[in-house]
Length: 318
Ligand SMILES: [Zn+2]
Image (tube, rainbow, N blue to C red):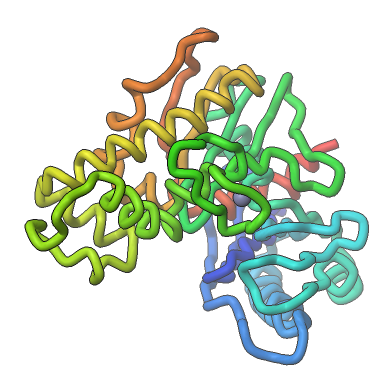
């Protein structure tokens, strides 16, 4: 009987459930918007149960054996209770996960921070197979990371290790981070959610006359619009992306000296959809205190976190 994992990716925007084989084949996949309305986080728990039930039914009809359920989630997590707690990205104080799913399905249930499981997924399904020291970095609505050091998955006190988006990388602009706990954090400049704010701040710092620009800065609401202007070779935007590249390089320089990786794997929507403005823009600013690791973009693309969830089931980390 073929073994398949129930893999769940619980993001702030989307909730995805998939059936993934040990060889890395996605057999079935369901995607919905993450529920945001209701009295408590149980609306998310209940939705997870309904979707998992659906996919388990499908697996049973096809005679697959299910060794467990892997969930990768936005944080922060309370690992001991198996819950998401006080996440800034969803409107509920807590979302119980492990206990209700175990009770319902009588299967092993694994819950990890999404970037922690993404790096585990790279190790088993992606380009990390040959390496013992691997870093995964996502640049999407936020910035996060996962680390395998000497073949060991770094986990931290409550499963929140490697929150590299909150590395301090700047004192020049000194912007307050979305976490509200500090200034100059990487995520506050280079993430999808924060790039438009940094763009406006940076333009002002250039002392330009805004009426001379070919676009209206008031209209820029998303990082997607910034990259669209870059594709039109808008000079001032390309200059801005150079500054973003410098700050990304500062973040990655910190990652390199903190974890001494053999390979850094990049993912997340900002990286996946704007490749031409990412690697080439930060490469010139790498400091080579240590020999540079290999730096690549994830071959698992948007499914990296789902593969991470499946890898938790097939190869549970210690
Ligand atoms: Zn922060």
